[in-house]
Length: 472
Image (cartoon, rainbow, N blue to C red; front, side, top):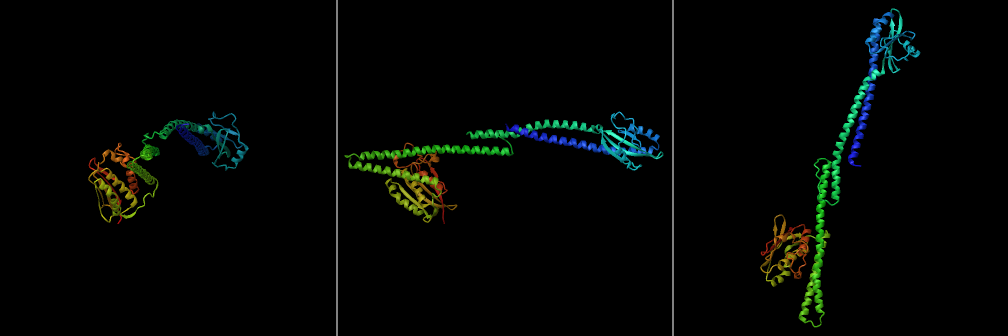
């Protein structure tokens, strides 16, 4: 069952029950009010008739002459009973009387009337025979006789306005119900339409259509829900794109690992086959042994880099920052790379403040600089490698590694720190690199909550910079 139909039925039932209850209560209330008002009016009018007859009728003859005049002008039926309770005089308005209406007063009523003072103008009310009756005693002073005046009226005459009011109320009720049906349909459609739109949109989003947006221009809760669903859809789309990208990177990562391992394994396997030859000259044997050793060391570096990257991804305590003197790390690196720089006829220069203290993990920072310096030497054939560090504004120490090597084209810079990314796809992996050095650099600096910047131009060298927090 559709929600619009449920809402329509609910609104209709509630409002119809409400209108019917109010209409029924109004009719009952108006009926009771009219009856009470009619009774009060009859008592007042009966009292007025008794006063008039008391003043104008001194004898029985006066009574027979005056009463018909009053009866013709009155809206009531008036009868007169003698002292014995027998009908004495009936007025002209006799067409309203039924044949079975009594012509004498009951003994109970006579007893009740006899107890009333002879000159009293008080009235007595009773209700029977589809009529409303009011009684009062009339005393003719000249003849010293007592009569009972009966004033009555048909209930149907009293209730006649009720029928008109009932017709008006029922007509209004049916018109109200018709309006309620129309309004409930419009209102339920107004409420159900956004719900239907949201349901359809939620199904589409659940089905994978994360680019779908809900166009619901409303400022109420439905508008807020639509906005939330749009945000959720956008978030899901972004997360899906990230997952797809991560999946592609993972596939490429595994393919690169397989390729990186396959090449040195082939080299080692070939060297072992050559070494197995009994007549292999000593010079070639030494060369094949060195080649196998180099490839073994390269695989070892590869797995060390992979372990570093894995720890950076999973271990929240990957780095252990502490205060240390940066120049001591630089001295170690200068001693490690001075021989290699000399072999390539490169000038290796370290410059910076001697007492710069930073808050970082010294071993991880040394690994970062080791990778940057080794890359700078590897891709430089002449000129110099300059490593510098200095205090900057904001309590930072800036460290830079500048080379005069081949440089990097601008389109490669955004991907330079991706795992196994190589700027020259045709470059032989046998040059000794693992393709993970710069990825390791980025993971370590990310763990230190700092970023590395690259400035490079093909043929003019490269500058890589990052900052560390200074420590007193």
